[in-house]
Length: 289
Image (tube, rainbow, N blue to C red; front, side, top):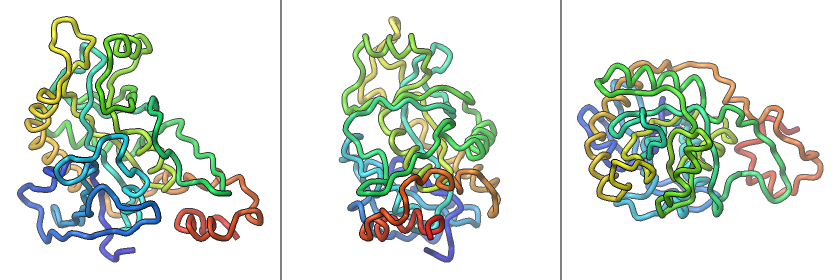
C-alpha cells in the first residue's frame, strides 16, 4: 500500500483528470491477479489532498461495457490504498423529471447484465455480501452536498438499472423499465458497485443524465452523438463537483462498508484451497485464522 493514500478514487472518462488545479501528477501501472485494469492509475494532488483516477473504458474509450475488467479496476484502486470511490457515469433517464443535463445520485441498483464477472469470491471460497443498500450512504451524501454547491440540478435518490450493452434499449425494454418504477439506466454500475462492496470500499455514483433513453415520444432516441455532446458539456461540472468533494472529505472516517465481509464468509477455513486463500488474502486475511 502507498503511504500517501488517495482520499478519493474516481472512475470515469480520461478527460476528468485534465483540469486546472491538479498537481504532482504521476501515473502508476498496477498489476493485478485479475489481469490489466482498464488504464493506468493517475494520481495527483487536488486541494492539497491525494486523488486517484482510472479511465473505465481505457484512454480513448476502446473498451466496451461488457469487456471492462471490473475486478482488476477495483483491485487496482484498493491496492493503492483508496477507500472511497466515486463513479462518474452517463445515464439515460426513465423519468420525465430527471432531465438531460441534470445529475442523479442513485440509492438503488438493479443488475440486468449477463456476461460479467460479478465477484472476487470463487474457487473454493464463498462469501455472501449484503448489498441491500448497494451505494454507500455516507459517500453518496457527500457527493450530493458537493453537487448542490454548483448550478447543476441534482436529484438525491433513484433506482439505477444496469443493462449489458453495448447496444441501447429497445422501446419495449425502456417502457418495461419505466413500468417497474426505475429512474435511470446505464451500462457500468454493475458489477462495479458489488465488487467495491466486497473490497470493503465506499462507492457512490455521480450519474449525468444525457438523454431520455428511447421511451420519450417528443424527444429523439438516444444516440452516441447525443451522449458525447452532453458528457462534454458536463465535464466542467463534474470537475467542479470532484473539487468540492475533495475539499469536504475528512481524512479519517468510519463507515460500515469497511467491514462488509465481517459476516459474509461462509466457507470453513480448513476447506479453503491454499491457492485460493493466497489469492484472496488481500480481502480475507483479517477475518480468517
